[in-house]
Image (cartoon, rainbow, N blue to C red; front, side):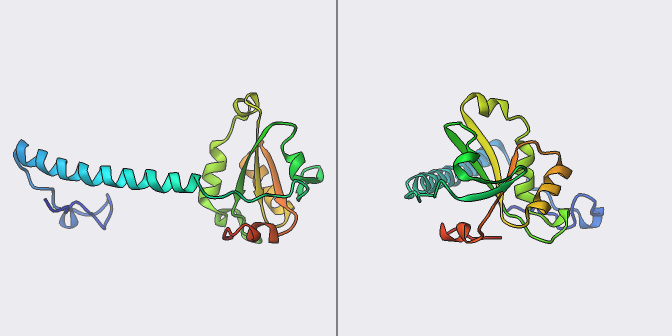
Length: 169
């Protein structure tokens, strides 16, 4: 069964550009196609699970607890970012220095916006922090504009991010 349901014109395309519909078949033909598709989906899921397991087995990199950060009250260390809790979830925001709000990372913005209530994490001895490179005054204005209450911080040294082998945006 060939997939001909793509409509490059989008939902507002005219009837002359309307996509053709999939073929109408009997139940047995449909089931046979569905069974073939499910085999592919299961293989895809198993490969995704294997990749996730390999990622969990990656070696760890030690990070200096005295790493200098900047926040609303001025400089502080990575250790202090834990705010006395046992765990820290550090979201690394791909900040684009000097660019206006609409040009900041959409994925980072979306993910950060989903973390609105921190009491659940705090009750489990977890602190949530957002780190980014770039001028603190820019990122703090953006955070304020977005209405985010979680701690927003910035790396004090840009070289810290690249030393982990991770890529910058």
